Every structure is written in C-alpha cells, then in structure tokens.
Length: 228
Ligand SMILES: Nc1ncnc2c1ncn2[C@@H]1O[C@H](COP(=O)(O)OP(=O)(O)OP(=O)(O)O)[C@@H](O)[C@H]1O
Ligand SMILES: [Mg+2]
Image 1 (cartoon, rainbow, N blue to C red):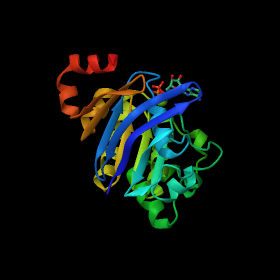
Image 2 (cartoon, helix red, strand yellow):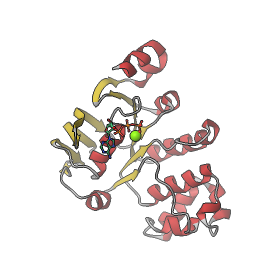
Image 3 (spheres, protein in one colour):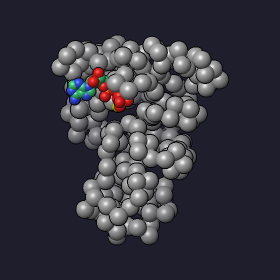
Image 4 (cartoon, rainbow, N blue to C red):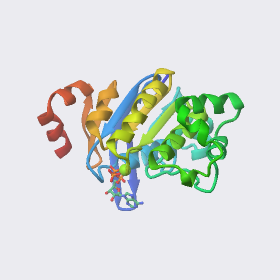
C-alpha cells in the first residue's frame, strides 16, 4: 500500500514542467520535496491531486490507478491537499471551516486535538485569527477529512519560522498516525529533518532522491542538488 508515481510527466501550456518523476509515498512516513522557485514542485502536487492530469506516466493509490480521476474522486479515495497559498474561508468561523471536511463529530474532535489552542477560537470568524492560527485551521481541516495521504505545499509561506515550528511536530504526528505525507517546503533543513525520504527537483527534473540525512549532513551536496 502506498501512493506511487510511475515515470510521471506533467505539462502546462509551454511544455513539460515535470519530467519522468518516479516516487513512492508510504503510509506513516514523510517524504520531503525541496527545490528552487519555479522548479515544478506545485505542478507535481497538482498532478497528484488532480488539478493537472499527467501527460504520461501513472499515479497509483493503494494499487488503484487514479491518474485520470477527477480532483473530487481522488479526495473521496483518501487524498487530502493543502494547496500553496491556500487559506481558510475568512467569513466562516473556525468550526464551520472544519465542518467543510469533517464527516462526524469524532473527526472534528480529532482534528481539534491537533491544536488545542483552537478550541477557544471555535466560534470566531477565521479572519480574526493570526496567520499561524489560520494555517493551523488549514492543516486541521485537511486532517479532519481522514486522509490516507496528505500533500502539503509550502505551508510555511508567509509565516515566521517560529510559527512554522509549531506546525512541524503536528505534521510529524499526523504521519505517525499512519498517513503518508508529501511535504513541499522552502525551509529545506526543517522539512528534511522530519523526512524518511528526500527529493530535490530542479527545472522539472529530479536531481536527488534518497536519504534526507545525506543532504542534511552535507551543505555542499544540498547546494549542488539545488543547482540541478
Ligand atoms: N498557471 C500556470 N500557467 C503556466 N505556467 C505555469 C503556471 N504555474 C506555474 N507555471 C510554470 O511552471 C513551472 C513550474 O512552476 P511551479 O509553480 O510548479 O514551481 P514551484 O517549484 O512550485 O515554485 P515555487 O517555489 O515558486 O512555488 C514554472 O516555470 C512556472 O513558471
Ligand atoms: Mg510552488
């Protein structure tokens, strides 16, 4: 059981933005994907989530070929995504935001359990929350859907590192509960520190795939891989 990309190529208008990526996201583990701006990280996430349909290759979820599934069908099959720049619905309360994905009261309570500090904010309009609290709601909302696989695209964007540090152990806990996580991050060191598997993408190509430790231990290697 895993989420597998086999030789996936993703194109947008001008041509391929992701070429021949093969990747396995295992339940209970974090795979961290890093790479420079414009490398194709979001496009890869979109090819998995169904915003884009790969032009070749396949996406398999627990042995089911989901390559041509709609976004909704993938979500119903157990895939949750936090899209880059995705925000809460500002006019809804925290509770209403969570109710968008939580099917039962138990799912809601479990999601709130990730961030006990949200309890007292439940009936506040989400726009009144800080940026960090809003990202907590976004993550809790994705978790409330009870996904098997969770794709996170740059949740740290616009957050101070100290605020992002609050999210990291929670992401780790979600993986420990059995969810397979793909973590795309600009804070390479923090994100690689949580990972079982690492991948670096530059200009749509995989420049590194393997142990996160090797990259963490060797700043020069990480720099080289970022250069493509
Ligand atoms: N909506 C779009 N239409 C056309 N081209 C796009 C679109 N979005 C991204 N691109 C192009 O696709 C390539 C990959 O972009 P993508 O957003 O996937 O990279 P990224 O690694 O997520 O970058 P960032 O770190 O800035 O989020 C880039 O060349 C980008 O200019
Ligand atoms: Mg991106």
